[in-house]
Length: 181
Image 1 (cartoon, one colour):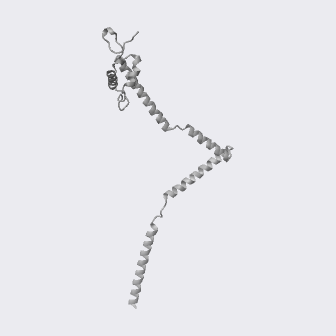
Image 2 (image 1 turned 60 degrees about the vertical axis):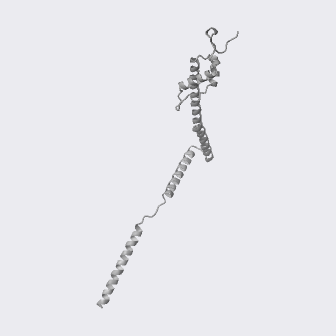
Image 3 (image 1 turned 60 degrees about the horizontal axis):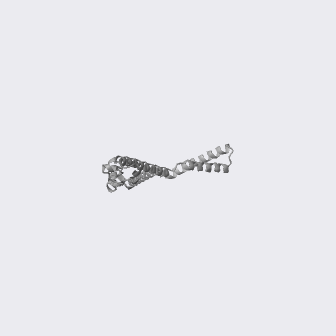
């Protein structure tokens, strides 16, 4: 009998240990945090905020005496006016680039006119000279006029077409066109 009691006690101890281990395993499973879908939660919150904002706007317009149709028309008119007043950044950038390019061209033209007049070209021939001059390399990367390059371009044209240099009196052995009167 004592042997049976010992066996019963051992069985009870084993059952107690098994139930304790099951409880520990179960508690470990219960300690695992439930998984949240944060994107879904954020969507729910945003939806609630939008609904609150819409109801606030509707109440405001009702207090102002506007019907839902009038409210929609007012919002459409506001959006249209806002679109008209919003500048087109692409168009502004294009206009700025064009204006900068025109400014650089005018600076080059002015520098070329000065260089031509310094070379003794008559004022009425300067326009023809500028049309023939290769002024593509007259500016640097920053858009600044390179006076030396402009002068060289003017000299090159005058070497090719010396008649543009102008008339010198015949007594001085001048070259070029002589005016016949």
